Image 1 (tube, rainbow, N blue to C red):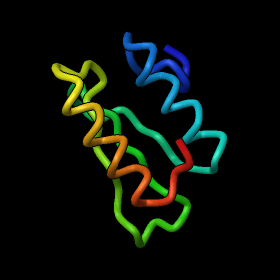
Image 2: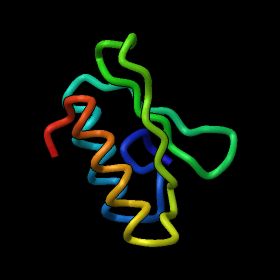
Image 3: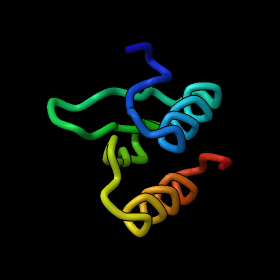
Length: 72
């Protein structure tokens, strides 16, 4: 699976692609989660499920990414 296709979910892959283009580091965790590291690493990281079980979980992760500076 390529770096921009870390999930079987299209929406999640779109977020991964935008993060990579914005200079973020994106990694797959040992399980089914994706870790997003902003360019300013001191700001911490955001975890998103690669297969969100609900739209609420997905929206919460998007909100966290926006608060760390990712333009979505």
